[in-house]
Image 1: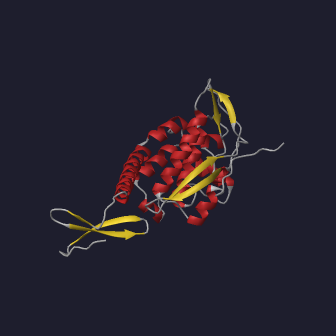
Image 2: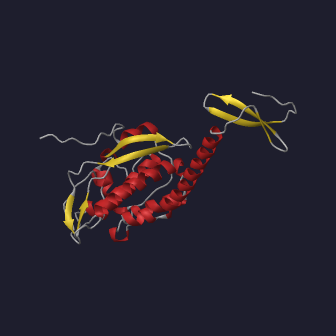
Image 3: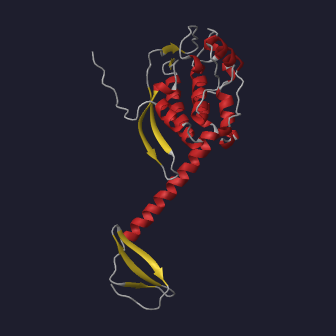
Length: 258
């Protein structure tokens, strides 16, 4: 049997992170919004059932395409993959099996305690932390020590890179990486968080401005004239350029014809 899947030419998100060192806050916001949208869809209780991924990590997020915006920041089109450990359960069901990748595992998963889809939210928090600073929030040479740190859940923002990260972003991390899953933010709540929504509004406004400027440029290119355009106070002289017409004011009193 052969499975034909969507081609993600830019590879794993982990590879891009390693090459960059870390992402900017705006780049991270865009990635987390896309990831949260995908997980919110999985966690949606259709016909009283939902899907838990249970192994969200940088390696399981593929980049279909990337672009650079006007602020010279990356915009990645991501896809969540590898559903080998995913399970579909009825609403209210809990799990007890220990599975996943250690640095991304939630405290309740490590303890083999009854856990739900909220374990995916913890993993999103780990991913967001790593995108912003390039390192996981909890690091230890021994797995036993790592699990101890995860169970405590004490976040640290001492790296100098955190000086450029907003308090709003840090607060989102605190909401995602709460040890008690009952007090942990959900995927839908993350999408409604101001750290996501406010920036989206700004991006929408900026996009509208860009479209307006492009429209104005297009209108200028549609101007047709023979020689000189004259207004009551200023003379406009038409410069012919390779991409259309560029109309600019001149202060000289002498009139030129094309």
